[in-house]
Image (tube, rainbow, N blue to C red; front, side):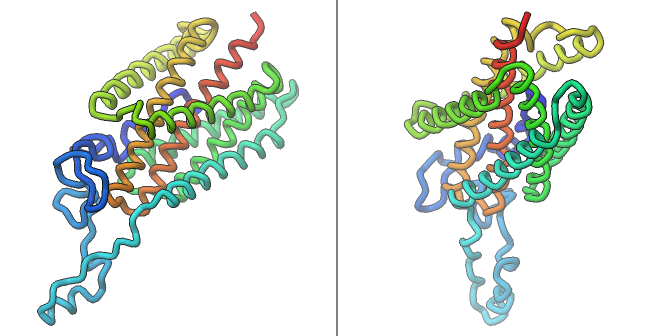
Length: 303
């Protein structure tokens, strides 16, 4: 889509206690993170995930009538790592399938490239709108997330086909391998403790990402009204530099995504949070893939 990631309004960033519950303590049995309240505690004042015990236990009112305390809410609805893996795999699977269909059904030869490119851009705009809608929603909408993935896949299929067939053969596979390498490297570094996601880290990443996106927006405005590539931030040597910066920012967002998943598991987040984790990971992986694809296209484009 575009070189931006609407993660700023994800649930984790909008909490009063910071990203993904920084300085909070997990439930009993989880790894200690801090000393403040657990944002997923059940129930808890001010906790957006706190559930009314009567909503989950239809016999709670009857228990009160007989003088017995209500039963504790069931814990089977909490998010697990399998939930995150399954929903992320489903979201990426939809994206890959629609990308493959777009690649196969939308030719990019001289006679059809304009039409295929137009369809791809239209799909990108729809995907962008859906991504922002989900980003500002307080709850995950699986249908919305999967629809976003479908339209995003169409765009990626068209763009990848154009770059692969007209600029650099094998570019799409190289970008996929690069994205997978970044994902694996960040995961290993995060699990090994080489990357520590704290408030300072989040503040730095958010400031850097905001500056990056503003520069890209200014470049786009100059390109629209002045023609060419605007200020040259997305082509030539500067394009490569900003592409590398974009990949590094994507790697930082992956660390934030891993922290969000880790905290959600420790704090007993509801199962629906797995869809938000899948959505965030998909956004970040698309960002990284597009930056790799852009760098490959620049390196292989003729002068």
